[in-house]
View 1 (cartoon, rainbow, N blue to C red):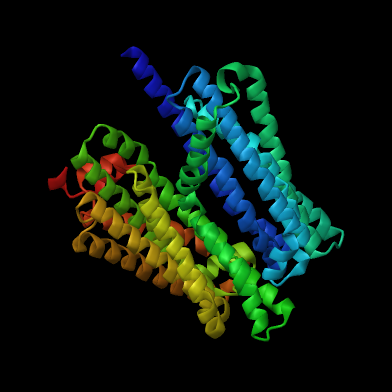
View 2: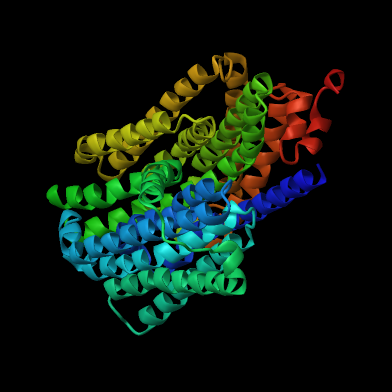
Length: 531
């Protein structure tokens, strides 16, 4: 009993370390793009963002997909079979990495032609080298995670991201000061992925050399083990991380379609690149919003897994309902709040207010993307991996189909609308699947109405505050300092208005608030009869 308790406590501590590292990595991944855009401008940002989704997908595979598949295979195995599974996993991921490298490196010109910009070839070829680091990074992380030892994964993720961001920002700044071309700056930024990956690999190798016999055993696998591990890695592993690729896949569609469509409309290539770069400003905004909304909601997923194992179905349903409710609550607040102060945020982060209409629509994506990612993750936790994968793929297909139609009429604003509709489709479809899986309604109309009213109250207060601020500081959007003061103070004001209204309208019960991070403080806002 004591041994089981100790093992559970170790796993819980490891999961907390890994979650903290993941949040740090996601936040840093979003935030660094702001200074990079300030250094390279919208055209330089376009160059980087055209290729970034390819690298981002590789990161998801190395961080979530393959390690999760390896961990699930090896978690309950010991002795000879564990060694065979480790070796088989290394062989499969190595094969995947080598083939991926060859396809990206030799096919870089073809990919660049599809993106309608042959100057992107060197950037794509740089990303291809990241595939060669994938086997070592994925397999070592998966091996340690199967033992509940998350420190190597968390440490390597954190150092990888810090090194990558430093290379991107410092390298880009130096090249811009030297007057290098923006494509050379973009290529240098992409090299950050190589240096970051090498740093992660070095850290993981240190752990392996320290205790390789315990955590990284090898033995040539039997044919049966080799085939079994391949199926799990290439299907279950890839499927498991697809929800983490969701936004990246939508960005990848834009990389192939948006710039090419703008040029086809007769827009000069230089202007089209700037427009695409302006549109890409929305990506860090969405990413930060999603980190806040999904991290808090998905912190409850381990509890869902535990309840499922214990067959506590009533408690499982209640926890699923609460997780979705938190996702909607935070996602809607982030979407509505950001859209209300978009001009100030745009100037604060990116120096000017270009692309406001498109960025406002992109901001509204946050609520749907948050619900979609949370719902997909819950479905995967419940074992409905195939269904969630199908819906996510359909949502990406909706984006690909709508993009040409909407871009022809609305340029980057049209692309933003297609993203919004695609994520809305994904969110509603996944919610329907989740409702049917659990045989109950996720949220009732009263709760949705209460959350919407709280969001509208916040929106109204922020609009009023913006009008007052504008009257006091006329033309404040021309000043980056004043725009920053307005944006940051608006965030604080929005929280102060939104949360009390939400709690007072009894969207959450006393018991539910106790389960939410910082919920013990919100309990004090409940009417006394509910305490």
